[in-house]
Length: 397
Image (cartoon, rainbow, N blue to C red):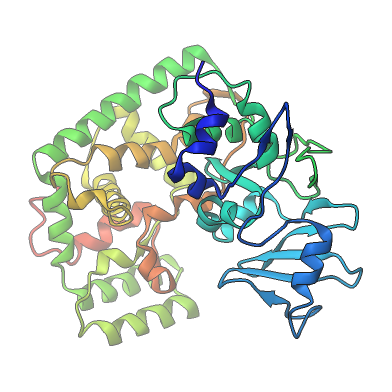
C-alpha cells in the first residue's frame, strides 16, 4: 500500500501546493503547521487583526481578495471577495458564514485554487454550484488509511475532499482537531428518479437529433451559417427587430434604449446575432425545441437559434483555438447537457426531481460580453427576424 501521508510530507511540489511543513503522525501526534495567514487560531488571528488601523470596520487586507477583521464580540472574521466566509470563536471553533451557492457566485476559483495556501482548509468543486470543504488535519488522518492507485497525492486528497461536507452556512469546525462538529445534509445534491421506458424513448430521439447536428458541423454548415449571420446588415437587423416588436406588442422603453444604443455602435464592427438573447429554459423554448427533436427535423426556425447558441458556447472556451472548426461535438454536448433536465421534464422522464442548478448556468448560450445590450427575442421569432435582412437565405436550411 502506498504511504500517501509520507509522500505528501516528502515531495516538495506537493508540500508547496498544500502549504504544509510537518503534520506529524498518528503515533507521535498530529500538529497543524502555520499557513500563509499564520497560526489559524483565535489568539493569533486577534493579534493579526489588531495590526490594522480599522480593526472593527474595514479590517486588515491580507491580499487583494482576503480580509481579516474583528466583530463587535471580538471574534475574528475572514472575508473573501467582499463577503464574510468564516468566524472564529474564543474556544477555537470556526463557523462557516457562507453557503455553497455563495461560493459559486463569489469567485469560486479563489476558494478552490488559492484559499488552501492561507488557511488549513481545502475547498473542492463537486459539480456546478456544489462545493465541498474539509479541514486539512482530518484529511491527513484519513490519508494514513487511504488505499488507492493514484499517481499523485493531490488526486488522493481531492477524492477525500469530494466525499466531505458540502459548504453550508452554520457549519462548525474544531480548529485544534480538524473535526466537523455538525455535519449537514441541507445542500447535498440529490439524484432524480427516472422512468426507464420513457428514458429509452427520450435517448433515442435526442441521439438522432445530435447526430444530425454533428454531421452538419462536419460538413461545415454550422460554420457557414454563423458566417452568414455575421455578414448581415446591422442597421437593417435592428430596424427589423423594432418592427417585429411593435407588431407583437413587446416594444417597450427598455428595448427602445437598447436598440438606440446599438444604432450608435453600428459604425463599429458589429455582429448583430451576438446581441440576440434567448431564454432557453422557458417552457415555450423547450416545447419548440422538443417539437423538432420529435420529428428529427432541422428547419431554419430551430437551426438558426441553435447555431447562435453553439457559437456562443464556443466563445466561452479556449479549445476552439486547437481543434478543427468543423468539430462541434463538445459544444453540442454542452448545449444538450445544460438543457437535459428541462427536456427530460418535458418528455416525462423524471418521476422524482433532483437538485437542479440555477438557470443562470445557461449563460453560455448567450454572448456574455453583450449582456447589457441583449435583445430578447422569442425563439419562434428569431428566424423571421433574420430572414428579413438576409440577402441570400439559400444557405440556411
